[in-house]
Amino acid sequence: MATVRSSLSHEERTAQEPREARLEPVTVSRIDAVNDTIRLIRLSAIKPDHALKVHILPPPTILQSSKT
Image 1 (cartoon, helix red, strand yellow):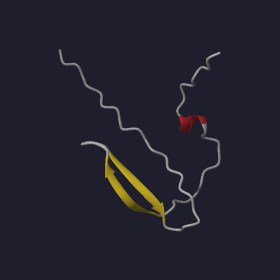
Image 2: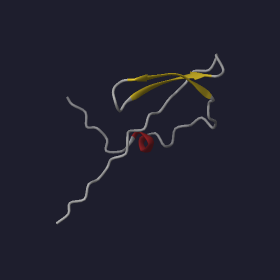
Image 3: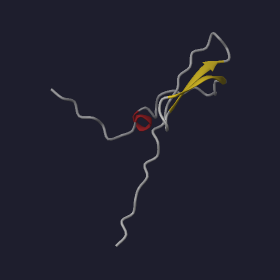
Image 4: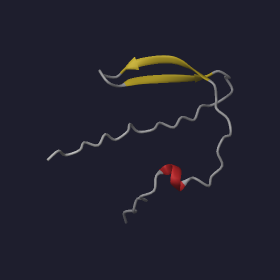
């Protein structure tokens, strides 16, 4: 049976879960061009014993108005 996907965003569904209270310092270790508009950015933790958890936000939606 197929599951129904929630209309809530991930942030809304997990709002009550604990969050890290700090930012992790990183360095950009590599940038690769995927195509003319997309770049792959590789991050490295400054402290070698730390793992990185990265949350990528989708690009903003551009709404076009219809002129009459």
